[in-house]
Amino acid sequence: MRQNASAVLSILILGVVLFATAQAAEKKTLEATVNVQESIEKAAATSQKKIDAVADQADRMLTEYKLIMRQYDALKGYNDQVARIVRAQNEELATIDEQLLEIDTTNQGVIPLMGRMVDTLDKFVALDVPFLPDERSKRIEELKTLLDRADVTVSEKYRRIMEAYQVEMEYGRTIEAYTAELVVDGNKRSVDFLRIGRMTLMYQTLDKKETAVWDNDKRTWRVLPEEYRKPTMLGLRIARKQAPPDLIKLPVPAPEKAQ
Image 1 (cartoon, rainbow, N blue to C red):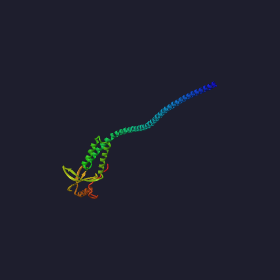
Image 2 (cartoon, one colour):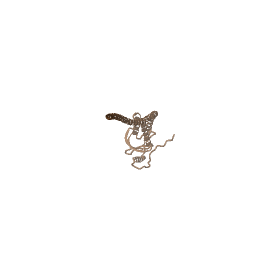
Image 3 (spheres, rainbow, N blue to C red):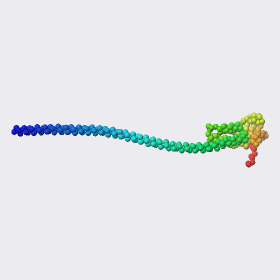
């Protein structure tokens, strides 16, 4: 009986030892598993951080890329516009060069023409009825001075010459009365002049005692008879707008036969 009891006790002890050993092994296995799991979680967390960092960097790079692409598009559009402007300016410069060449060619003909126009006007005034001699001579001298000025454009010179021609044309269809000095036979005196177009130029002394008309063929003054004194006085008043228009008897040169 004692031997059986000892055998049972030995078996129980062995079972306890085996159970304890199994528990210890299981505990070690569990701890190892936990350690592995923790290592995996730590590695996953580290990897996630790396992934998050890479994702953030990718987002920044994508944002920078989009910004750079917008800047590129803007710069490309600007460069294209500048290129178009440069092409247009080059074309305009070529056109200007052609125009300058044409202007130079034109000036070669226009400038001598303007000189001849002023000379012609000077001769015309010299041969014309001698009304307003100082004013007309001064205008021509100013034109001659103007032609030699480098600071005045060709177009302005031409405009001034045409303006002078226009003034001379206006004299032919207007009447005028003015007082000025007259020198006859070395004697200077103030007289009233009456101009009717270019047909008649007369003067009357301020005391109304002498009336004369210009003879352009003989280039001299011709004293008129008494019958022209009052008509000349009336003509002077009409020209000064001191009397209404009226028919007056004044000497007019006979028309010349056309050649």
